[in-house]
Amino acid sequence: MGRVLVVQNSRSGGPSRVGCWLEDAGHELDVVLAHEGAALPDRLEHDAMIMLGGGYLPGDDDRAPWLAGARRLVGQALAEGVPLLGICLGGQMIAEVAGGEVTGDTGAPENGSVPVTIRPEAAADPLFHGLPPVVPAVEHHKDAVTGLPPGAVWLAETAACPYQAFRVGERAWGVQFHPEVLPARIREWEADGFDPDEVHARAVADEPVSTPIWHAVTLRFAALVAEHEASRAMANPRRSPSRA
Image 1 (cartoon, one colour):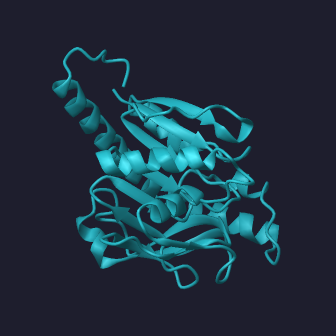
Image 2: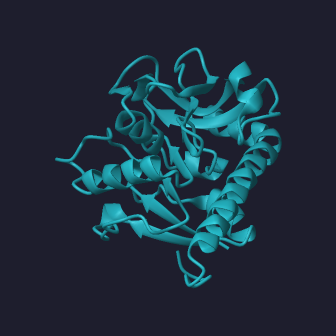
């Protein structure tokens, strides 16, 4: 199956259950701990990429110097149609690289499990079609996408943060929420103005609903990765099936 490059931008921000679901679907993860100084590849030679979250804006190169290389890889994925999923910071990075706008410390912060409204445009989307009208998703942010890239498809929203999910082109998705996060991780987050026990309890209560939804969305992404890997293999029959 395919190889997926996963860029981790913070200590606690690993791929978690999304990574497990992709591995269960037969894909191999190449997790780069960029926040620890691990080098990003010069070029994206994988069959897909996931850009994870972190406490930065996409252009915070002074605080996180690897972000310049991360943006370059996102740009390559967008240009070449490589399946791409950006989560929180990763979604903001996709928006900014594609010509949208990201603003720091804007609007009301969101933390914990939040009801996200699926927009009508999602009915034809490869990942978001057929979802319930409102789905719970874990949030942890105060920065946000404030302008979608030209031609982007707006897929989901909340009142506090309108651009919760969007698609750029045919194979790139940005989400503000965290489909990978289980309630236990919420205990590790600091969020002024929120009761940690209340936030955790709400996420636990929502998990039986949220988990099947984000599992299904992840498996749809996994299918796109497999399709992309197969098309690359047909275009280059000499390419080893174990490498991208």
